[in-house]
Length: 334
Ligand code: BMA
Image 1 (cartoon, helix red, strand yellow):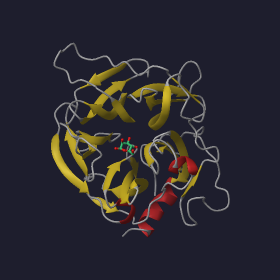
Image 2 (cartoon, helix red, strand yellow):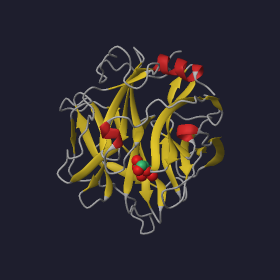
Image 3 (cartoon, rainbow, N blue to C red):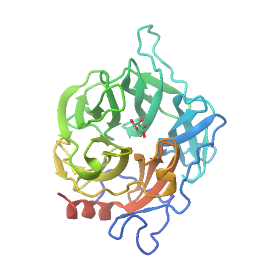
Image 4 (cartoon, rainbow, N blue to C red):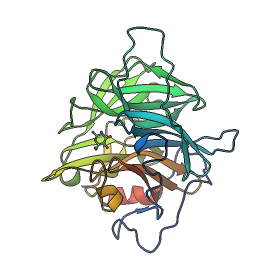
């Protein structure tokens, strides 16, 4: 297995595996010992900071990473905030939400709320994709060059839809997006679908990718961080939900998608990689949620650090090696 188009990232947040993983004996992931890496009250008004996205980004003040963070405030309004970090662990997150520059068009879609951002560098800029409130849950999209000025684009798809994730490069000459059509509530269903666009405004060539199956992913599934390009296919971390007697349980795993036809699933494992087990994953505003939205990758060493929301309250970090994760997927396919 080799990573494709992955820059080296020697300063990736990293902790070596101690003995066996704290997840399960054969898991290729292990949790950061300092979890939760981002506490709920890091900004002046935050009730919770979770389901957030980070990327390598060098700034003149020495910052090495930037991010877009879901901060629900103490009025329980959902919004996204910019932040910076020197080491990927300690973050400075703006107290106020991102104020997107919007086209001067009175009919441009509203953003009644924003949540669950992903950030993906494509060609020359960082795209932000989030769940945007416009007569219900939609996919919202915008971009930035510097994490100071942010520009909002048209919503790519009609409502209702969540979990929009852009691929890091064009496919078949088009921008490519994964999403999960939903309803206006706490959706008890959900498949991952693929769409393409030549210009990020008009989307089509919709293809079904995968449906919920059984066990931890029986109720609904949704794409997590931006897909990672490997010689074995796109490595996609995705969340899956089961419905227990006590409500939804959000876990996550990873699968491989075809490089040229990403709607074709090459391998999908039966087991989860992470399910809520630690106190900070099980106890919070929404109990039992592990929800990945971002991954940093070191192309030189295969190391990966995944940021995931914990119990809709704080942010956790897990580590692994991409080659070991790809092997694990193939071994546990089913
Ligand atoms: C989903 C979204 C996520 C959240 C999850 C669990 O519908 O709201 O942000 O993590 O529910 O509450």
